[in-house]
Length: 479
Image (tube, rainbow, N blue to C red; front, side, top):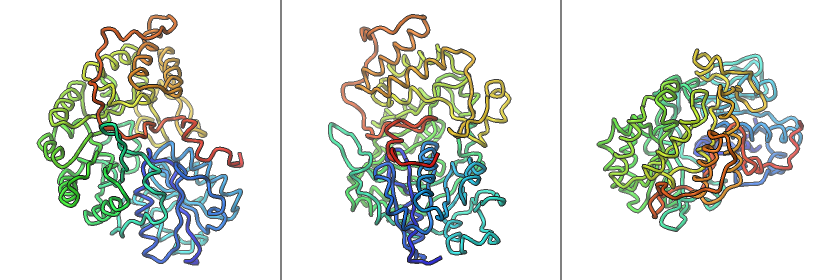
């Protein structure tokens, strides 16, 4: 491959963050002498000129919404540059390998940077050349789980941080940087897309790489850092070292991270230090408050554990921001209404983005749920267009409710008001009547001061929103 011919790397959607994976891969390719261009479809228009001059196209798909957008972008790219080889890489590339290889050239899963580099170094047009971790039509291989010594991440071709999600705090908005201290996960939650690829394994990114990239983003204006690991406390010592050294270097820098409820309890003695070093909020995949649902998902925590974790985190002045999957085959209408009562009781109204009340369980190819006996009676056919298995709730009202609350959230509105409208929608569904204007009398309200949050509120849903798909709206994808 001619090294001065550009490799184009595309990020599709990463919850409002600049892609750390693209930064790592860009740095690795730069160090090997390749010319790299990037395109982030979440914040940049579809650039036909970049597509036309690229000699190789890599599309990052770490999540479901990114895959939906990425496939549309790849089809459009093939119309502009018909001979361009296309590689999908990331978590959802592995899960959807069969479909992607029917339509495109390569799939790289797991720890993709090393295999990606080897692929472009090995003359990718040679079908007799096998590269560890790279699947192609007629030759599917397991994802590579062995990481490589990373080079300094490169963000030279990235849009400015002002284009991405900001931190909202005390009435102000502040630029946010993004890194990942680890990949994979030690746990095997049945609904999670990570276990089918990593199977309980995780890898860490070296301290010096992370701290160097954090410094680079601070130089670009970041005043807050999001650690986007699936679970920042999978490797607690590693995470503590990073947070401590980051605080020592940048005492005014704040941060947030994601951790399991069980880890917040297990490592509760670490929470005071995180608070002292600038942690503003912690995201945790609560998913449900029903112990029945939590058991089916094999989440490793109970409703009582959620309450304990809230107390641990709030005691230190850190906000807990739960993520939810309220619509599963085992969730009931009473469970859904109880969720609103719980959120009000524990003053979490402003800590949960309204879209969280609409999330429906995703069952992608390879999901551990597919072989789970408790899921079998609900599971339908694979919908290839949406890259998920269909399922039907045993109570038709729950499927109707999920559509109704999704429409309300799509319409938008003040979070507090929307919270009450969503609950009223559920009450009306249970009582078999039309929804009424909300009466907030006697309902528990959140504290007046809103907790810190990021401005990107949308999540990874089975059906991307109009705003998410608008990043390449109007581009003919050839379908």
